[in-house]
Amino acid sequence: MVTKQEQERRVRDYRARQTVHERRKRRQRRDSLIGGGLALLVLLGGTALIALQQPGDPADPADTAAPAASESAGESLVPDPSLAEERTWTGSMTLNGVELGVELDGAAAPQAVSAVLFDTQRDYYDGSTCHRLTTSEGFSVLQCGSIDGQGGGDPSFMYGPIENAPADDLYVEGTIAMARQGNNAESNGHQFFIVYGDTTIPSDSAGGYSVIGRVTSGLDALRDEVIAKGTEGGVPDGPPAEPVTIDDFTLE
Figure 1: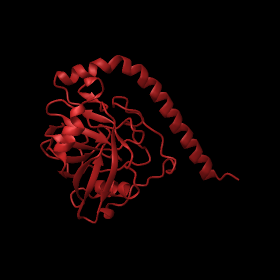
Figure 2: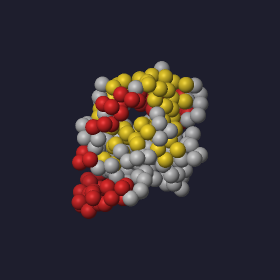
Figure 3: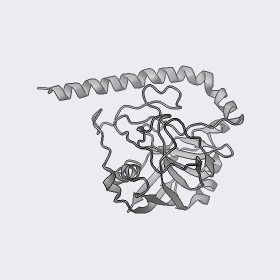
């Protein structure tokens, strides 16, 4: 006998899938109109937000995916901030064979670091892709961690607040920070971005972006072997021309 809870879960899953389907159809129509406009905007000095798309956020550059099969819709797996232990975590992240040394600050951003630590402990990132690369002068980021590899967010894994955002909106070279929805301080999730050159990202009505740590080694190799290959079509903001995969992400 199917329980009431199971019935409700199935309804939520169905609605989530329907939302994804409808948004993808809208995106296909929209992309044909805005593809060239985005490149022009960046060339004219516009700065794109570091964002992930969720329901009701049509301005963001990607679709929303349904919760992963292992996560019941509406049941958050976000860990308590205490998991970060208010200490520094060190480790490595390997992208397309390039190993980066990383350091996360569990005291400055306990909730965000706890979430990323939790994801590394269950190998969430291993084998996933980095779907977004920006190459404009003054806006240099590689964004990773999308649930569907195309920018979609995970509605069952969202949290706040914004932590440790720079007061001057400058994200210095080597910064690792969390992506979120525009104007929503409670929409951090799995996605993060690596800043490979000093980047200014204006705060929105919610504030800035949670800085969780920094790259301590390997950034030059990342620029030479991954970033230098550019984006699909040579646009200033888009998928990497050569797919970028997170081979491994460990912290201790």
